[in-house]
Amino acid sequence: MNDFRVVYQDPFEKKPLEKTLSADEALADFRAVDWPRLNADIIQGDRHVWENFYFWEISEPGVGDKDHVLNISGEYTHGKQLQSHGPLLMLTRFIPRQETRRGFLGLGAPRIRTVVEGPVMEGCTQTFAEQCVVAFLTRDQHFLDTQIFDRTDD
Image (tube, rainbow, N blue to C red):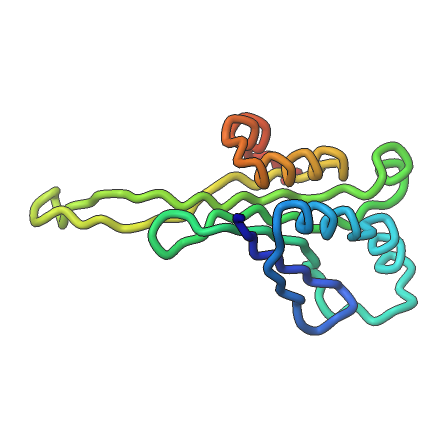
């Protein structure tokens, strides 16, 4: 049985909640996050926001000492965008890979190091984010590699 590390940062809590869950439990945990309510509560401003970057994150061991991570965070969504799409989310995927390098000018003994990089995709719907969580849990690398790509509103 493979377990996943899940971290949830509620915007109204000071510290994130961390758990180790099975794939089924992790999917249920993601579905339990009420993204529309969080978005509405933040915009209405009735409660004190402790953490502006609120997120749900899942990870599993990757290459070397680095984890393979899928981070889903809320975007402040309002107006026509909220009416037509619901609250939007940002997906960030951290993918560890090993890289071999040599010293200055390619001289010296080769050194292997683990680097972490990956795409950031803004403006995602909750349905798409859930599809990405399922792909992560089932290790569908093809889906993750082809569907999550760099897309920002900047």
